[in-house]
Length: 246
Image 1: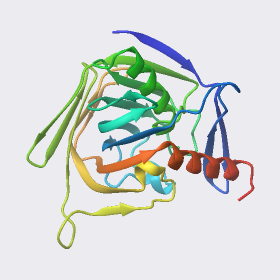
Image 2: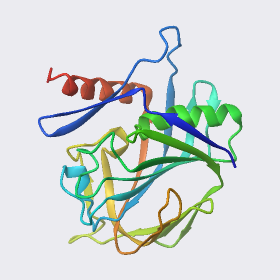
Image 3: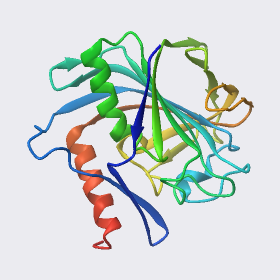
Image 4: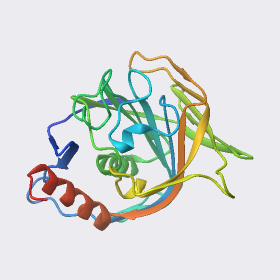
């Protein structure tokens, strides 16, 4: 297993009208723009009680929000690099008594886990995509290359991230047929344009000095299809918020 550090020099943080904004600075001027497209599923869970208030700019249910996002790529490409069947995940923690978004840039840690099945080109592609799916939000970022697997047992989705984490969750029933759906929350990025609401059966994590053991906490799931054009539009909008031009 390899570990590398990422200094957050490419991220600018600001809060405009109560919304935390971020922008990814331009890469090297001569770097070519890479087109990409990813279709897959999002497995997300955190320590908050369902539903997670952070997406609505509210304080976490507990002292901190201990959160995980896992991208399961069904079909994807980054430039000409195929990403079919690969995973990338992020585990983070907000400071005490602060929302994930108002504390952006000051999170206690920000660790990204890349599927060890990926070859060198795929690993670099997943690292690049993580900057869009999981904008760096702590002073440093750690990357780790580990086995990531997911098993679906009936309604239960069980994802294992190396020896570090297990995220097991299921959707809950709505008042009518089907499951509760959250659409267009205030702080949504393209991957979170909508999602179904559930709760965890188990969320554990043992890295970054942590020892999480949660159950019956927030769990979210969705299917998505996103590309570089959607994220370029989203990131340009956020940049305008940052500069007060919206």
